[in-house]
Image (cartoon, rainbow, N blue to C red; front, side, top):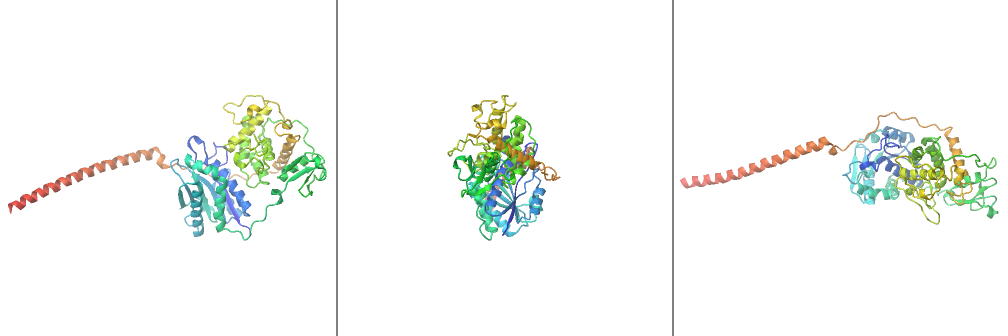
Length: 480
């Protein structure tokens, strides 16, 4: 039984600005769109792991009608949009549904809000009916989940470290309403196998690599003439059909301009990892432009290091460490970077240190903790990273360039989706924080105080009237 579910991250893709980031914390340190783009890929990946047919309806320009149309075209039975709330004074979790949605969907919204609030340790603001455009245009039950208040430091201190576990909490509730008829199929052997690259199975001494991710083993076999990929039973699972691919021999510089767009890089990666976060590709291009490093090739290096951003080794996705910086094996996870932007910048800086002797670009600060350990300018070409970035890494640079060659071939036929023509999405400011509201509220408070004063004077006069009236009654009683 196939159950189709669509999910998206609200607001626009980077760069922010000029694109719409949604709600932001003070000083724009945290952006709603950025955090939503951390939650959404994890949500999609968890759905895939459970056996659901998942679809990412995130729109580069944040168009809610585009998100809804994509979900409709996919034939989803449920659509989810991930957001965060705006005012810095607010707190808690809430889930929006359309006022006229089904009773089942309203109940799911209430359960999701309660479960997430309990998991994060935040106030449960509950399920709320509202005719947001996304909820209006979708033709199936749909929900907007507000994962706390991005401007509230306390909320974010509880939400950000628990994103991985929160998606499981969400899916536990969704699965109650959308159960699969049977358990999802067992994971394919790629997650259980160790793939060994040798000349032959019996020639143990010829082994030049062992990988959990098949794609990485294939890259190594392609880069080394005469080698094949074997599973743990000694069966050949990959052998170059047209003869081994010779590693590039020309000087391919690390410095230069990217030739491939972030959109093509994202589509290329999603062929192997449907839950890939497009912000990573966008940041490699952006940081590469700042430092004059070829961001598209650096991105291919990240694919090689992370196994198509599936990880599986010492480094995990939450570290935002795309190049294994500081990870030396034997369980050493290496460095952790707070955001995708900082992680991509550190990766590009590390390449900049290897390939150039120039000072940092104006306005840039060192975020790569190992920048000072590199002999500046020692590796101007990608193959010069052999034995430096990776040890022994005798074909490290060639493996990166092999992936880049595949990316170039893919990009030649890639056609991006046409942009959705829609007015820009703007964040509605909280009226309680506007100067006009504050002024009017002050006037209201003043008039309320004046009314209280008048009421007090009236009560005082009424008391005096009662006293005088009582005295008059005494006098009249004495005259009778």
